[in-house]
Image (cartoon, rainbow, N blue to C red; front, side, top):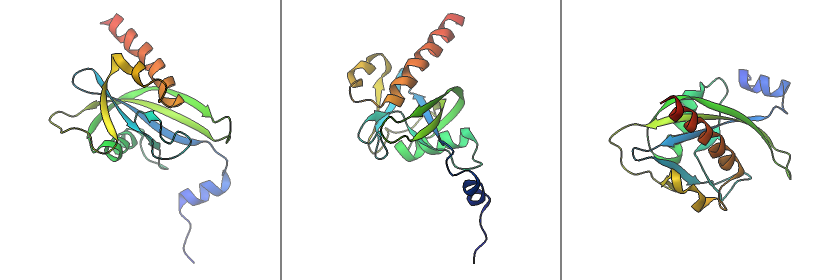
Length: 153
């Protein structure tokens, strides 16, 4: 019989905890933002920023870099947490806590791989009908952060 990991023991104690995810707002060199098509979950097929699960005891900045690498093959430098939000899916009841992180693209990289692509942040309305609710909420809040930073200028 194998010993249970610390994570397994914690999950037995609290199996109904919300899933914690990290969503990464990656700005490209020309004011564009990294997007991609979601491959699974209740946002499957929708357009979103890179998002994925936070592993137990994984630092948020490490998760952000890992998630972007898995989504796009790109390396980023996570800067800071922008905001945290809660999402409860109306049909499934799936409960998520989402930590939004701002990250800078490391210079000298090729284009993103797979289903990922950069899109002009000023033209996100092009994708509004295809974007996940999480991404829409994230961009709305992110735009407030960007305006405040511009005002501090």
